[in-house]
Length: 445
Image (cartoon, rainbow, N blue to C red; front, side, top):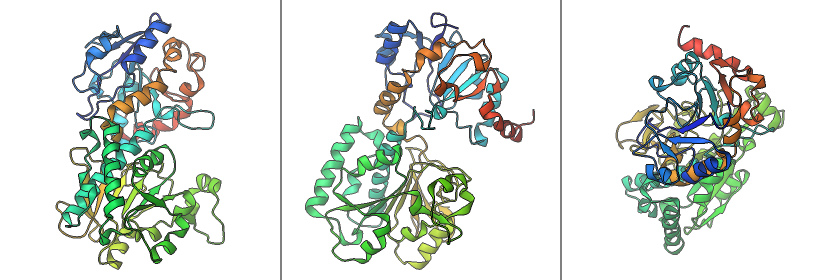
């Protein structure tokens, strides 16, 4: 397959009404067409952040019927009944961990002899992801959490400036949101927070792209950083300022400890032998008003906040500081055990009652709010699309020119792309053979 015969399609997103992003923006599609002669078409969409005319004005074909296309670019999962035979698909499949809800889709891709390239698995030689929305997830998630904090404090009758913050999708662009948050920061600096909120400490678990994106938004507000190891001393000291917020960034050594207390914490050992470690995060919960969870997690790692930790907190304190958990990572029943389902921008939070260990349908009773939207970058679709497309476009020529008629080891894909091929012509590639058990575990062959 060469670049004169391969047609690439940007399919419409249909998972939900909030998904307005595009994997390739109009100007990048035009660039690829002119420089490399790649045929590109776009499936019309009524919700995409870019109008159909934005593409057609750049000379890009519009087509509802995309069966003639060889490579299908998407972002979110594709409905089973829309999966076409013998296609090369690129999207976030959310299957590599054996996610049960997506096994039927993977099975259909397998049956249809499709090739699946998962963006999440496109990495460099050190295993670092090359195509991602982490920064945008952090930015959007922080705005959502601040907005939810304002609403939560309002229901408690506590005056606060955060109630002026809107949800990310309600701003025309990210710059508008930042501008308003900066104004709110000025109000905090000049008038201060009410005494009930002082000190207002926001904790960030993790320090990668997602955390940095969230901190970028938080740092617009007047603040001072406190080291995790100094948090107890800081909270017990006097002189907390009411005209600033405080932030703590938690690293792995702050969050877990060896089960054998004779052993020191060792980061490499933790990643290699996580079963030898346990969470120590509960010690910080009493000090936090807001927790932003940004850390990568798999089931082999300990849960950082168990429901029992929250129960202990709420039993030991009449009025715990903790108001909201912004779980940007959104691993269901994962690192934050009370994250029981993913929410939507329409209903971004739910209330979790730690004493009863269940979700509340109303605001009565003591609870912590949980924000667990699983597609946060979609709330800032313009910035997310531009950022993503800028990276993806560099891989498109090689993807278009690869010989998909050859055996997998001879198809001449760039190594980062090759590592991300979960299925090749309907067969699991060597790195993903382990997923066979997940497919068979959900449906009998």
